[in-house]
Length: 465
Image (cartoon, rainbow, N blue to C red):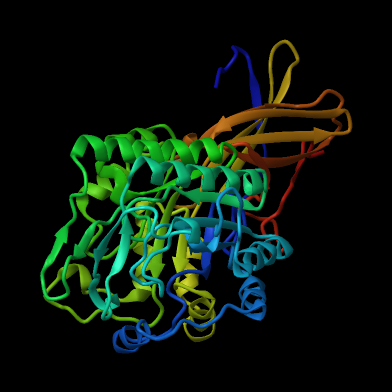
């Protein structure tokens, strides 16, 4: 901020931090609406047993109950390729997917998605659309607790596979990319769960091996192609990249160029290398953390990473800079946690994401008579706003606006200078918006104004007399 010689300023407002839940774009608490883990169980033994049972069917009432929870900000849809496409050249989206999108829209919250091409925890042996089954080459594998008498199938990353994956993404983007309620979409199509994992049992009795299906150079090309396909299909929607993929240069380049990042757990699989590459992300990109499993304590005390209480995980995730945190794998997990251990949501509600407020507001007058507000902006959250923040001052004579990259709101106070509108009178109203990708949405101030909620606008009184 430039300070002209002879400028005079005086403090005109102060705002304390708001302590409750704040619902804003680009942050919040996620409930998985539909996934390949549509089973319950709130001890390690229950979960292991139920993972092998037939999944429950998603009901509209479940989604309505989840969306009524005041601290749920986002629904996550995690489905197979066969759940969005059956035949060539058209989408065939399952009713549960569309049900979840509509539930989010009705509730005024957002949603995100991942389309998986392989999942050991899915009932089917493969997740290929019907028209590609038997047409694309696949590799048999078994995975941990999820293998049964027959192996699951991982599609190989042939040119034909990449072509049809790209076509599916293009159709999905045409349908949903402009939807303001769509907050983010995951880069997928590579590895188990679409997350990049290739550690599998080739045979049930043999140890896990890392499947090397292509040369390193070819694998780099594959990852780059999948990233490019996603980016082109969803130019308006933030792209999320799992940190398992971050070992590839194409993924590292995407992270450094503004891609959001996801970590599929905080447990011992979260390596220092993943952490370092996640911190390569730009300051105006978001971090998403999976998943806190309510009620499940890990019992392996030989591994220091497992000597933890699941109730502590939200704090650990926020320590790393979580913009979003997920609780559970399905709506019933979320509802169980909300009713049986609501404290799981408190840390996410008070720390996750960004929490912007002007700690101090000055009125400044320049020697030439120009007047402005100077906002001493503070971020009380664990993450930066993932995009560009626009500040607007509106008075009787009109309004003015300035834009600030979200990376600036980190650590210490940041001064934002906002010219006062001509003839604005003695009162102006401040408001904010956040632009992420090609989408712009209003932002609430995390300021305590005595209203019992985070306000959309702040009134600034310029004259005290």
